[in-house]
Structures are given as C-alpha cells and as structure tokens.
Image (cartoon, rainbow, N blue to C red; front, side, top):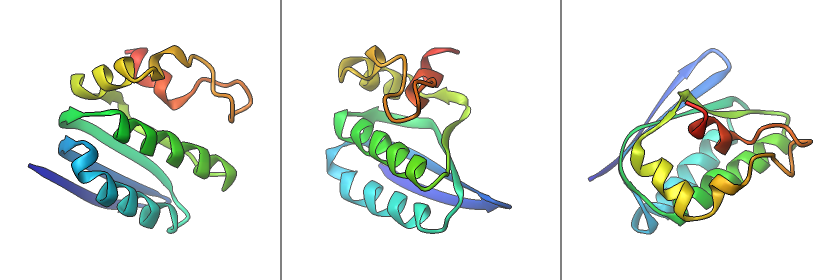
Length: 117
C-alpha cells in the first residue's frame, strides 16, 4: 500500500505519506514533492503512517530539504515526528550521523528533528 495526500493551509503544504516509502514508489514521491515545491510554499511532511522506508526515501527528503533552502523555504516533519520505519531508515542509511546541516549554515538538519523526540 502507498498513498500521498496533500492539504494546503495558508502558506504551507502538508504532505501525508502513507504505506511503503521505498524505491518502488520513489519516482512518484519525487514527482509529488517537486510539484509541491513548485507551489512556493513551506512543506510539512506527515510521516507517521509510513510502514516501510528505505534509503531512496531518505535521499528524496534530503534533496527536497536542500532545494527548499535554496528557495528560502522550509521543510519539516509534522509534530517533529516520524514513524519508527522512517527513523530506522534514517539510522541505517547514515542520516542519523548528520547532527548539523552542511547546507543550512550549521543549523540542526531536519533529520535531527526525528531523533530529538
């Protein structure tokens, strides 16, 4: 199972990703996030209902973060949380090691948010 639902609230787009966030769905995830980024809004990701995630998903989130920073926009996690599957994917793919964001002036990276809860 896989689904992405979006909702617009003022200057923010909320993207709820559910099910399997894996290489099998990477192209759709990437296309939907690119479409969302082209709306010139901040993005909040609701990742609480992801059952399985892999490194391809983490790379897409990281790339979206870098692109939005260049556009002076933000991406964050809903309630600074993510499902255990996303946390595990971040840990196993090396994203947990990045405590400071190299593209965000040394500020905490969005990946740090999911480990600080």
